[in-house]
Image (cartoon, rainbow, N blue to C red; front, side, top):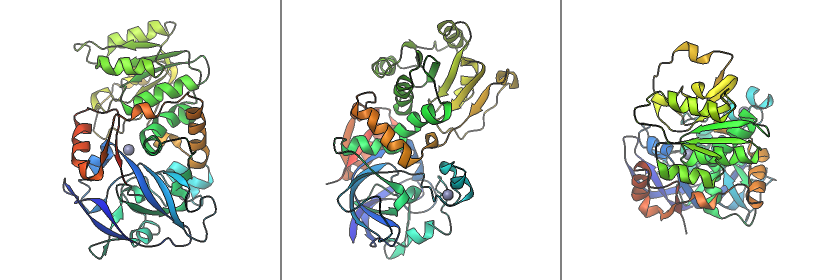
Amino acid sequence: MQTIAAIADGFGSFQLDTIEVAPPKLDEVLVKMEASGICHTDHASLSWKRPLVMGHEGAGIVRETGTGVTHVKAGDRVVLNWCIPCNECFQCQRGDTVLCESSKPAHVMSPSRGHAHARGTLWRGTPIDRSFNIGTLAGLTLVRKEAVTVIPAEISFPAAAISGCGVMTGFGSVINIAKTQPGESVAVLGCGGVGLNIIQAAKVAGAKTIIAIDTNPAALERAQRFGATATLLPDAADKELRDVAEKVRQLTGGRGADYAFEASSRPDLAFVPLLLIRDGGMALQVSGINDRVTVPMPWFMWNKEYITPLYGGCQPARDFPKLFKHYRSGEIKLDELVTRTYSLAQLNQAIDDMMAGRNAKGVILFN
Ligand SMILES: [Zn+2]
Ligand SMILES: [Zn+2]
């Protein structure tokens, strides 16, 4: 079948062009895309040195399934997950499916699985990879069955699409990695798309103190609507956020927060969460910083833990239903995170708006 896709050239730009998508084989699912969120990874994927069907967070309707697929059927509404467990390898067997060894969560394709699927998508007569093996910025996507989870009828496609990446990253980091308990305290550095989801997940977890930190007053106001119990606006002169750390201590009984999350994407703040937590607390870096940064080792004292959780430790079959249960009960807001929707033809504008920070979240709609 032919469909239109956004194709990154690997050297900084993209074009809309026709791709040919094969029917699903045994363990595959063909999905008609309805919505695809845009995040910074999509911008980065423009420069991954090879042509690629873009997009890694989306939702749509199952069009066709292979004969080995039983958990979804044609007509089902589904969300896609970009960490695709194989459920067979060493890491999947020990329950850490985000570390699946045959479905690496980067743009690295596994020789056994990736290329089998790449053959399912042709561009100009040649196999082309899909971003994170899902490539959601296309009218149709062909994925392994482990990449789709059914969504409830009442959730909109844009809301479901964003759940597939930033929402799950924030939610899962709190629920699965920090395992925040009722009465505990949480500090969040950066209140954009991921930060807001950390805040609302912390509220769901019963955190008593949720401190939002951002240099943008509008972001702090939003953070309060999502459940922050206190907000801090750092002074421009406070480079290492020492004053902020002092205020966090005051707000947490003089000890520091139980957990502090870095969701600002600012390399200079990568280790600052260590200054915001108590001894034995946990610092989580969730914004995917790739730069080389230095840190004074005493910041790790005493017994502080530092972790960069991947995809919130998401196990799709377990965590999407959990997330949507909280959405249904009104504890998790999703629709409010979608600032603006675009057509695929407006992808350039959507990327521009994201890079300029104009949206909490932009979503491409297909029809
Ligand atoms: Zn993303
Ligand atoms: Zn695996």
